[in-house]
Length: 247
Image (tube, rainbow, N blue to C red):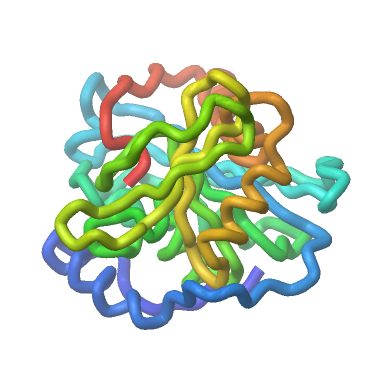
């Protein structure tokens, strides 16, 4: 897949924030999707040099992509890539830790997905440019962010039935920045936001279309399992649990 080279990766946290703000004007929040025949899920895991080295940026990033025919959701391909971890852990700057490895994996993908589901936030981000937005702009592909926890925003609990939703709202300005989506009845929801070239309503619809009876929809769940398996087979230490994973 072709990847746009829009900025360097060897930057400081302050420079990274400026890059996010600079690229924000390239993000499209309206629907501009082709006919969907292939979708993909993307996620990463970390190999650590020593305990807590994820904070300082020492180790490796394992990126995994799983592609499917849509709407059958039959897997057609999975690829991975391993890159050095060079950026420290800074809330809101997950892109600069994970995207270089994800791009390396996408460059190995023979299939061209019409839509990518990311285990991350998109528009529901302090600067409205989370990993799902950033990746979509660089790939020039529609993307949706599906996160397991809230980064910013407030909401009222959606209904208990699968398919129920509630707006995720930035309380400082009242803007709806995402949606809280119940993928399985009486199970904790996920947090959906636009990445690139997808409206919020369509992002919700597509997330539910690839949900298959588990809390985490299949594309990002499979990608998560894929990279965790890769890490185990490489004999690495497990990644520490922490808050703020989906930035």
